[in-house]
Image 1 (cartoon, rainbow, N blue to C red):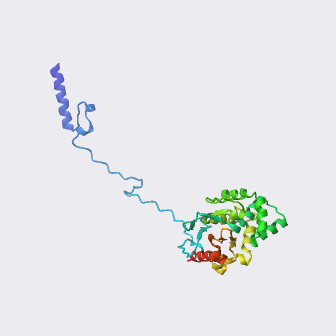
Image 2 (cartoon, rainbow, N blue to C red; image 1 turned 60 degrees about the vertical axis):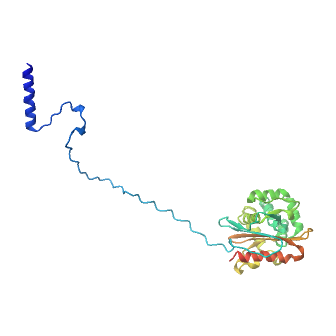
Image 3 (spheres, rainbow, N blue to C red; image 1 turned 90 degrees about the horizontal axis):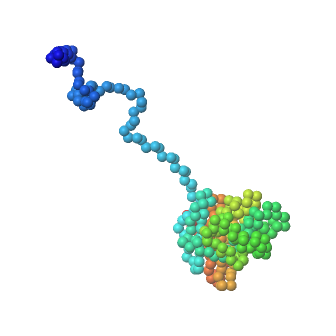
Amino acid sequence: MRKRVGFTMLVLLAVAVMIGVPFVWGSDLLDDHSFSAAAPAAVTESTAPQVEATRKAAPAAPAAPSLPPALLHPAAVTVNATGFWSWTVLDRRTGEMAGSPNAATTQRTASMIKAWLAADYLRRTPNPSTSILRQLTSMIRNSDNTAASYFWTLDGRSASITRLVQMCGLTDSKAYIDWASTLLSARDAARMGACIGDGRAAGPKWTDWVLNEMRNVASSQEFGIVPALPATEQAATAVKNGWIARSDGKWHVNCLAIGTEWVLSVLTVYPSSKGMGYGAEICTSVTRQLQA
């Protein structure tokens, strides 16, 4: 019986060889690598887009257009003067500031603070009487000290300066004794000017009114910055200067101007013997150099 089975298997194997059909014992025990002759690889054409070996960089976002310099802009400033002087110029379009190394040093404002006193009152009193408006006009245009003391009281005295610091983002300044002795730095004075110019100080109803009063101060009070400006810019510039010869034997002369695109503040302190015009000329000199 075993011989017949063995014979049968030999016959079947011979037939398989003759017809070319591979015959694998236990194919589940062998892997594909058992075959020495691999099937030719099929050539296919993909309909999907080919990925480039090197991916192109995404185009850069267009750069924001740079603004041309404002009329007054950062520049090297040199002043040959006795005493203290500092300055800050602020670009109203961007909020960027530049100034002297001592721009954070505070000095007494004198009448420069009167523009804030008017704005602070009007923002909180939207419907002032005609009489009140006349007093505000006198305080700004003619630098009326009696009116300034009146509005200093109505504004809550030092509380008004606290609001100034908070509302206008000041970093160095504070109230001191009275309105004329308010301590402001050059950079904070520029921030105050920007705050008046953009409407935060007086509010939307009264900002134009305050700026118009500042553009029409008495001619004797336009010293310092305005004379150094082109004629076309002078009429559009709002001004509030401050000046006082104190009992300490020193002049405090300060200049603040709000232009269409800029704000400039200049603070000076020097011996009283040199006269008020000495400080005014420092303001003029700084203004000219910032136009270079």
